[in-house]
Length: 289
Image 1 (cartoon, rainbow, N blue to C red):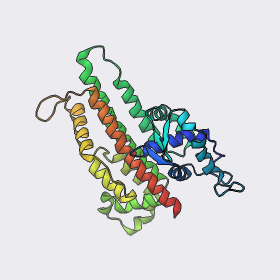
Image 2: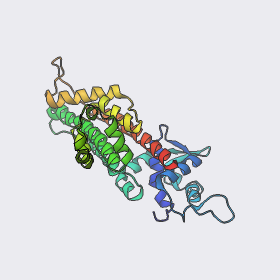
Image 3: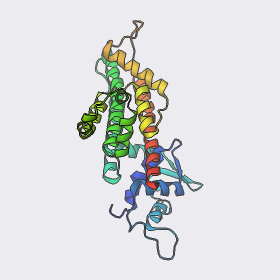
Image 4: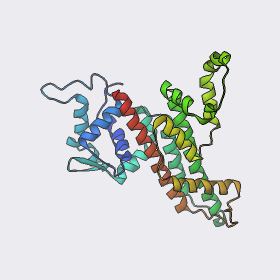
């Protein structure tokens, strides 16, 4: 990529801080993570005359020496560590669409984050008729699960489309394929159609069945899902809202509130961000091989 400017480091830095559970990174850790994420070119990796560090690491250090992040109140800085502030997180969320121009991020993750942001914003819209409130928030609640399903499909589809090893691992481990019998005379035909067959299989999966999807993610990427009990309960709630007109199995009604929607947004963001962290760790290992 072209030479990276200090200004172009702001959003990626906020993104990486936001990915940390405590929203904290040391300067050294930030340099290393940005190096993996941005993949600086030879010019940025050139060693500065008379010094031991390269131009890229110096630009990251300038975020501190120039107080770039603290002057904007995006971060606080103490004990050689950056801590993301609420202002910094809000700025990141508002500018997610710009990340795709700066980072080599896949669109599906940006689209997921933007979808959740839209739902959060819609949660603050007041219904004209109070009798519509529960139904309105029920629709928003259902939309969060839809965003979750879309991410899980888009992520695995993108990874398999762009990595032959992931394609091979899916074919070897997908339970349905293990039960199929193949005539030797059909080998070439099946091989030539393998990518199309995999795409069809991925499209036919039910992505809110988290136990099944986790098994597939684990087999291909060694990725595990966190807080599945809450998410599975939320999926069941969505099922009642969509297929039972909001009624639980005992006949009582779900009363979905704004707080329920916002809690599900937060939990779903955490759920997907945890998967993204595991993808990032996997990419770092692959880059070092």
